[in-house]
Length: 384
Image 1 (cartoon, rainbow, N blue to C red):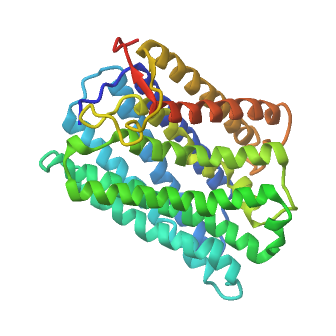
Image 2: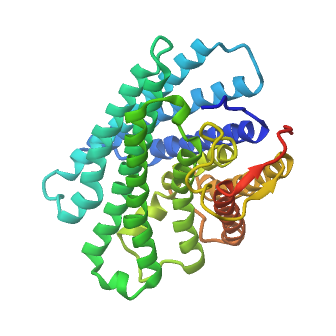
Image 3: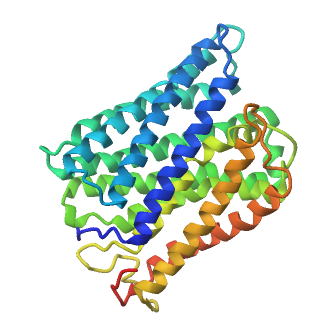
């Protein structure tokens, strides 16, 4: 694998992504303190949840510090950065482990139902067990004294595992919705059907592709065969998923009436957007990776190659990142302004119209750049 150049778009993406994650976690942690219930049996779920969010906030803070030191070129050795990153991974593992409280709460007497188990109990149990195990393994592999390929392998496994958990969580909410509302909730409303298909089938296909990619690379295990472009495309599509679903709601509203799905996606909307900031990093990476400077399988297909210089690509990347951060800022304000209540303003003007505009522009720009990255050849390597 070629040496990865941290040019300006990638550095900007790192800063935007980590600050967005910190903003997200800060909100979720504080609203958790204000709104959690401390009476049994909810204490089984809510107390671990608040502690878990505290650990995630610590992880996000460490990530911001690492990135700021890197971007400003402060004295920060590779060993120190690795230690800080490992600590962040440990805190993130503890956050996911806190989901066990939510899983146990579903099983309490006179509360357990098939719908609650499907949309809550099963996915939270899987998240609480599976993701911490993978993160702890990555924690031990991310060691300066161990070969780098071991850490890369477990990064890929974590991405794949996260995709599975993300698919299971969102798909379970849709399945729970169909169980409670009936199949007519899909067949009579094309918007709901579109959301269902993209969630249940689209995320599943993305997970299977990631699993196949991880499996094939793990058998080879050589760094020069690691195709960062494919990885970046996978994670970019993951980040664009919540935006696509949210845009459906912004333009069409709660189709077919209130249900489990809308209660989940809108009620926990800020949490659903945890994947979006990763696009600020992965989109620049799409234009920074090749395998042995050879064309990928897609690029080797017979089609017209687009030639564009680095300066123009960087301009497009900055424009896309700008659209994304404007959307994310407006979106965040709709949750921050009503604090300490759990209300949100996503359906009120002028936030609604502004999110429609900037969300649509960012989605189109990100999707187009992802497609172009497989058909574009950079003709000028001058950095901005």
